[in-house]
Length: 356
Image (tube, rainbow, N blue to C red; front, side):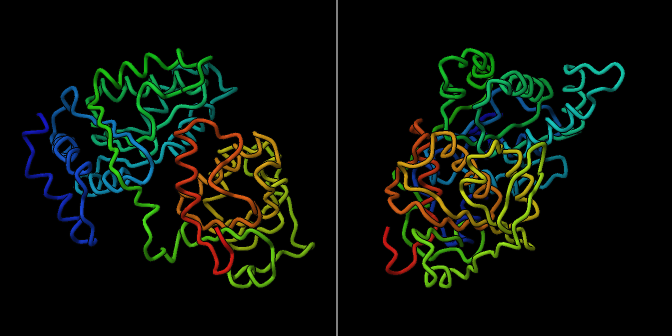
């Protein structure tokens, strides 16, 4: 099946946009035939033909996630999974390494068993925010791609990275070249690069989720009160152990989790810790964020990872500090990463008189 064989299916995207009061731009309209063909192939009982799966990449805020979600919702079958890439690999690693110490354990066979358990009889697999940054994951992701293609599963992935930009570190890039070859050779690679970053378009702010949060450049009592924040007392401090590391929190009360930047971003915390904590705590506050010339690159990289995780999880984030922020995040040098984090951080609300 080719994109041109499913023109009517593209109407589902148009109808979904109209129902939400949206108008698809030219760049979005251009990718609809391929996405509609992928949806049609997923509904079929036959294995997906080669080049039916889609790798949709481009700058942040162009509507990739909306298109992915609309496609996923339009395929009315039970054999489908839609996952953020962080969540998929957290689950996969947990299953692979759960067998450590068991008689006969081999990582390769454990990996195959984990994939079998996660994929089951899936015919449509949707990944949001596909990326490869960790050299240790390169072989895992390559094998995942090969397994999905061999099974004829329809894969639809969104990414901020062109395939050849995945695992961009020159020292390790060669480790993912086999995976890049699979993407380039067996998926339709489509660039979505419209003129508008819709996250930056002025309009009504969401009253929930990530965009309900604030960036307060100081801990002024009036600003805190305006954001509905009550500073934690000394007696509320406690230690949390989301994984193998212990983190010092200023508050973990109900849904709210409050950290000092130093305690969270200068500790040996990891993305897996943030993912675990975000399940139970839907409102995060990070205070004491230094000026952009303060801290070290690793601290800012962890801060960027926190922003990514909380945005993807739909958690509210309030940031207190960073008084000189002007769109630059030290330690985040790759232009794609910088554009993504800047776009997401820009969704935080600025209080009147607070400046930007």
